[in-house]
Length: 501
Image (cartoon, rainbow, N blue to C red; front, side, top):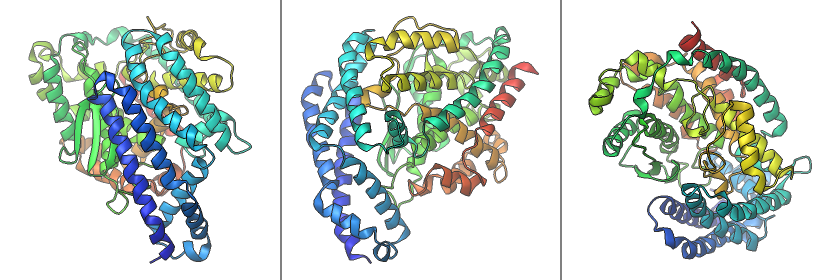
């Protein structure tokens, strides 16, 4: 046992407890808090954020971490303790460069910005959100300037926070490879769109019945309601306190069958990751998902690779029809599968099919780079957004609500986050390619037994929390680091089979 680590432990526990309190406030603000509460609640969040900052950034922790970096002290730690010390060192090095008063002010700002964004989206009023967004962007640039390495751009520093080591030079190559595959394939597929009829999807689906079926879907893929809850929010999301308290949200539309179903499968994939973290890691700084990209790989794996496959729906489609007999009684499984995989350019990222989805991410990536490099201003975002959608997808949003205001992420300061969605898709395809060597995925799905799939992911990804990074996980599982070829091959094979054979 390390005496130095034991002295560090109370600081770890205090910061973790404060972070949990902040998570609970964030959850409450997005789900149940009254709309007029935010101004005062933000002050409380600011105080808690300052306390969480101080629990890590102080002289005693600085001294302890410096001593624990010494080989003679580090080598006597357990592997879990070593991972925690590494994570704390990284967090400490970043946070101590940010002035405490600015960190607190930023925490209050982002606490208020979420409700301002939600109101602006509802009222199609970008101008109401723009002042908050300008402040957030200003803080993001300042924080990136404080923390970036000399060879990094400001945007690189933001990207590195979400996926360590994946910067603009790597992403430019990654996205170019995806465009080379997706753009020509999409043109061929769209030409066949008239062969897919999914008019059923926009008929009337009572919200209460949607909620019941979505709860069933969550349980079906393995979400444990003894260790998790599901609520509603303007934008579906997943959060957690530890591996026995994981929370997901959903959003329901009476005239869109697919939206809530695939949202709950998507968020369920995130949740299974957090539920699968090893007990020895939970309640520690390494007790959550390792990166945004790996997290997205789990949600996209469940939502798309599993959830949009025929094998997944074979044992479920009858139950779905029973839930909505007045709409789905005349729809057969083959037509339903073609419908849920219909490739059709549209303005909304969260409603996008697999083939057009990466183009939505490329648009956001390019806009964020332009914004952080001062090539455009916040006030120009609606125009640039619409121009990019016309260029890449051939569609123009009807208004800012379905355009630049559609995503919640920027209100929370999540710049550099969107590329994680595309990275996650690529990681999911790579995992899928190798999983077949050990698990008969199709047979499991057709039998309605997802346990072997879930256990494979738990064993190779979930249990490690953030003790390993993305490429370490991939190399251990597949023998190679991130390789986008699996993703482009997956998309080509899937959509060729669906549309072009």
